[in-house]
Amino acid sequence: MNQFIFRLLLFPLFVLCLKTAAAQPTDSSAERLVEKADFFINNGMLDSAIEYGHTLMDYARQNNLPLYESSAWSLLGIVAYHQGNMDEAIAQQDSALSIRQRYYGAIHPQVASSLSNIGAMILDLKGDPEAALKRYIEALDICNNCKVGKDTCTNNFFAALFNNIGNAQMDRNNFEEAEKEYMKAYAIRSQFPNDPKYKLAHLLNNIGTLKLETGHTSSARDYLLSAQSLYLQWNKGEVTPDLIQVFMNLGAVENLEYNREAAQQYFFRALELGDKFYEGQYLEFGKINYNLGVMFSEINALSEAEKHYHAAYDFWETNFGFHPDQTTALLGLATLAAKRGEGEEALRLFQKAEMLDEANFPEKHIRRANTYNQIGGYYSKKGDRTAARAYFLKQLTALGMEEVRLGAIAQSLPSNLLLAGLTNLGHTHFQDYKDTKDDSQLDAALRVFAIADSVVSKLRETKLSFNEQNELLRDARALAEWAMLAELAKYGPTSERVFNRSEQGSVILGVIWYFCVKLYEMVLDVKCCHKCGSEHIVKNGSNASGNPKYKCKACGFGGVFQTLRKSEEFKEMVVRAAQERSSSRGLARTFGISHQTALRWIKKKRSPFPTS
Image 1: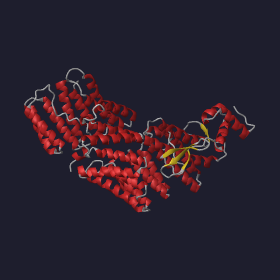
Image 2: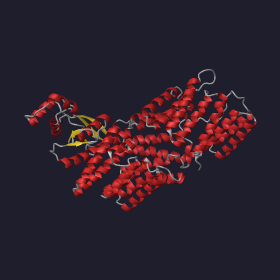
Image 3: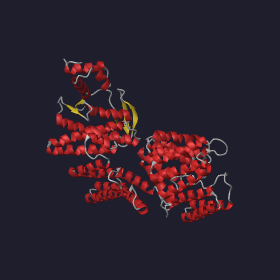
Image 4: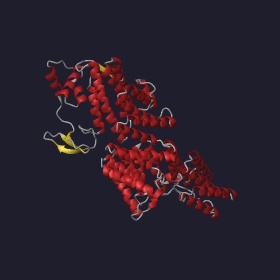
């Protein structure tokens, strides 16, 4: 089956623009050619569409009909788009744009329409949101200046532009701006809920996707269910292909909420619809099967997980030759093999994933970094820390960090993956120290942990998605735990020495790591179960002392989030901070207590004790 099937639903807001404007006299023969070409495109008969496109081109040139020539270029560009011919599709749309600009001038709805088409192609085929956004903004500026007479942009076109700008902002991970643009589109389309041409349901699905990405699962579910209801209303209860994407997103929502059974139902419904309408050739089949593989793996249903990972890999290999997500399926299969104790098979799959990435991506690429990270983790669990360290170093190189030193951070883009690589690398050094008591390994661990701490500081200044925030919290906790153990091993539990971290000044042993964890819990407002570490917890009243309680939906454990009574360890840290000549009011600001309380603890623990 041709590539048209894959691209049919990717850009439902794509403006064909084959019709000419009234400024040029209508030619009945040319109109028939346009209608025929339009019919063949809509039915996936691309060879016939190309034939009629060239016929229209010749007819328009022979009869001096420039706008019909622009329609021919646009038509051929759309065919090339459906065939995945990136450069050809964009070049042909540029030709259509050039003719329209000469005929209409720079400010005209037809010119804006061509710019919107080009932006959609750039975003989909090149994955370049910056370049696509530039075209969308140009189109929007034209429409804002086309407000006199008949040559105005329609409300529907404005809504399409706002939606497309939102898509580009989503690709840039600029979620706040994306939501603003989607809401501008919603303000227009919500006025016409019963008119399918305004595509309100598609917009609701986009907003649901945004809410899903930013962790607002309840809101995401509401938007997605509204999209589902509207699609069914428009089609008089009949299930249509539009619902495939909605079911996929609803499955992702339920999976995040740990409603595994509901998530499976939605994913399987999406697969069934893809089989029904596209004979198993729907573009997202690989992704759906991969998500099912992840879900079954999490509940240790290894056979089911293996089946869906294989289905994802085979789909991508059969239909694309190579697809970037193929390695994710291989890594999933390798992890399953490792869980079963099949070391040789796990290693074979890891090496196959590594080979595919190295053959298809440049040396510095996030895909390669992710694969190296997982292979390094595999060797680390096996106890082969030399091999693990080699892969973690390759991971850092793929992320732009050629040397493991503080200054090298400037050459790389701070990311959760970079933080994970540094933390894991430091952990291998620390584990080697524990086995050999080699002080050089301990010093190496402390040095790497200091660099990782600098990455944490940079990430705090970056806008992160909900999932990235959760990953940062998880990795900051791991870094805090291991670095504190390394410091204790280096300086001892009672040493008054300080640890200079990333040229940020002297801090008391262990204090910075304690507050690193507490700070991220406060900033991200994320808490986790004390027993299993799951963040899927709900409030469950308070105890007799007024401390808020929780219940974990993952393991069923219940307890308090954090007792209001300060521990003896906490009080000891305050006293030790005072020894570094912090004032009582400075201690109060740092530790979130009153300065009178700080003085009382100091007097009790170290009386008589000099304070400043």
